[in-house]
Image (tube, rainbow, N blue to C red):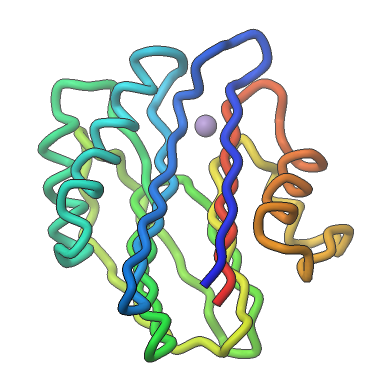
Length: 189
Ligand SMILES: [Mn+2]
């Protein structure tokens, strides 16, 4: 499994209200997330980091439990939206839960079209929907915050065969909005 990530604040800000999590283990398991704290600056960053801390402390917990625990941890914050992806590289299985507006695009011959439920960690929990997929060796998963234009997966101008870090940087470069924090995580396995 290889992955790459970029996260930059909106123009004129020094702190990004987005964050990401990327953790891998020797047994082929990995956990990835993109988290967008509501608003911007310090308080958004604090909210996003609070959710990231929950994931980093308990990366082995079931996805639903991680979402619920993050929801509780964010109750006195601005709130955040999240997309959470667990990969099992040994068995080529992926599971996904999204709450709120984080995008995911998967390049695969398998029909992998994860969707998120509307909601905000810390404020409004939707009925959680955990999705499970089998993927093929070499498939590419892209998680991105709403500081990235969703056009990137439609107009075919990005070479998705680029190595993950280069692909993440290319997506940010071409499709990043200057008026929002922007994060891209690319995983290939
Ligand atoms: Mn945003």
